[in-house]
Image (cartoon, rainbow, N blue to C red; front, side, top):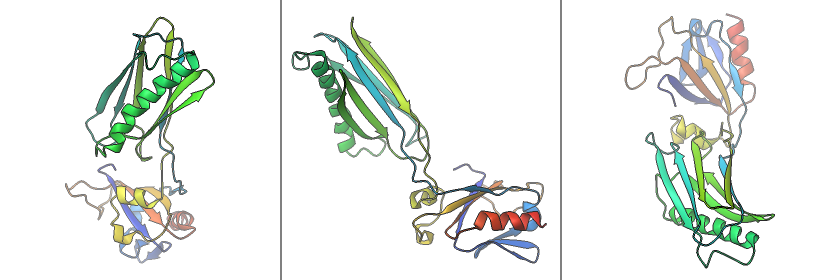
Length: 242
């Protein structure tokens, strides 16, 4: 979450109390800080983690080499980067191209899954699954979490007729679920509903704000998680009446 964003959670619609808008039972803000702004509604979405389909096709021979490199900043500010290599051996080379390509996918999946199963905290991959698609082998790697995009994949094959290609499916962001509230800084004790509507509001930074982060920076944006219907519309009605 950005330094200039502050998140709160509520189970009640906003009300105007004197010169303050009561955004939640324990949070209010001077009404002039919300004058002429737009309250943006974001419906709850479980999200879908980003993934990458890596396809092995063509004709691989013994001695060929395939590399898959993943790069990600999903779990840390410093990028995680690692290269996996599979050499086509007698055990991987099968009687048909289809079987060989599947065996390559299986070999890569085993390398990824060994690290997933190791429980590495900073490992950005949630799962790796091998399958056969037509005459090709397929490795599907899925990133950890649906909070942001951050999975990059680079592929290479040292082969005269074997081909490797990758296609990334971007993350559909999770919003309004308990894990999202925790990420935004909401204490677990305040998360009582299964899902929340999210209201985004940009503040008027020309007036004094009561929200200050731990380093003294004035907050410019509010993220309000609400468990009752109609919060965004009610807040916008208050703003429009100012």
